[in-house]
Image (cartoon, rainbow over all chains, first blue to last red; front, side, top):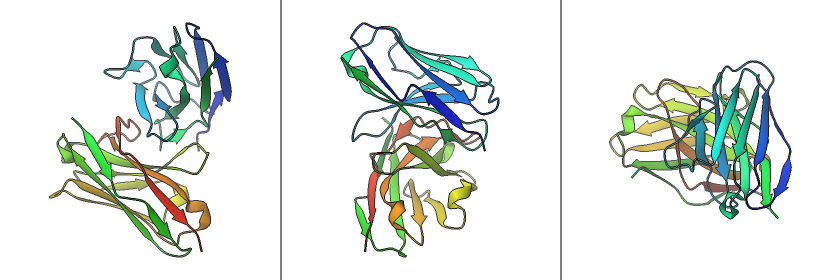
Length: 106
Length: 120
């Protein structure tokens, strides 16, 4: 089974900062990768598909990149509303999520 | 707008079964799949399985094979997930999500979640 590993586990940054979350797959998944945002007590929200395609309505400060085994989610200018846990998920085979990265605003 | 509305909280005893419903609206139900995702308390997301609503074909994660059944009722645009032989570690929030027909894992709209508590 493909394993997905995110880093860091937690991240603390200030409003306006540029932040990057990394996601690594245990084997190549081409660009079959999605990103989700989850706030406490809420369902996940779909952000990005096929590694770099922004879902409609998602702010342009979110950017996804990568292929093969290494991927990144970058938030170009952090906003207070971005405080959440972020998950990557591969769909090259049966879907598998990363363990999540908790992003806190200082 | 696309909406997925799930059934209410369930409390079950070990060994019992639970059936969670997910009523879809705002789109053509048979043009998409439905995935089910579980989240244990304080933990991450775990994909359980997927149903192609058009054909009824299912794929389940190996961990749940033999214990989970996914079905749909197209007349009411409702999907169901039944989990059998419940254990305490099945406690968590269960989500349905709209997925694709041809590929599993692009979950663009989610239900609000159903809390299932398994306790004696």
